[in-house]
Image 1 (tube, rainbow, N blue to C red):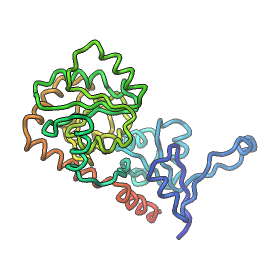
Image 2: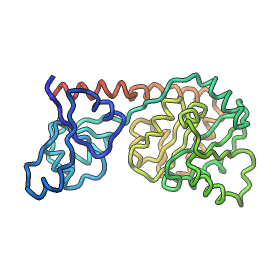
Image 3: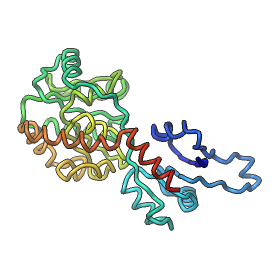
Length: 289
């Protein structure tokens, strides 16, 4: 097979896997010496675009044979700002690479560890940057809920959780809220949860949404986040402080059948974006060049 060259700004699990293939060559950033000597720019067969569509990105986009982006929103932006043809750009959503586990077994183990009643529904919030991901709005949603039989888990690194613990110390959170820092296997928290809420201000595709879907969670995410492309209208929040969200969450907490249906649908959707499935999609693109 002929060698295929690639270039990327951010390495993903999908790129890590494709770089293991003998027929893939990664083009490196030109050295300072090459730039000084005005050496001819080398363009890749495939450019994995991420970030802003600036001058450099436009040059790479317009001179590569194929461009890969991780959302339809970015695809539309690229088509608007460049001269690339639609057939030369493809959307491959972020890849899920989670070990399949039996939810019942994990839930029993972790609920015992955290002293949670297994009969309660679990609502999860986790993010690298709690503030930008809407922690304030999440807590406001939780305090507005009228349902009784649920438990809330907020997980993050020790610094973020300790800061949050100080901020909410003046409020009476009772035993509804559990703060977890530096949990060794975050995927397990997705597995034991029933609802994942991310009222984020970030637009970049939130992989945590896809993880939650794969682990059979109902999901709510801000409308501006690109992950909303995989969800139905019910699951979208018009803004991080959307006042209708608590009513929707309460509706699911009080309807076992609706919650079960959404969880099942989300799992089915997310299974189309496993690492192996995305590798198949990428290989089809490579072979089409």
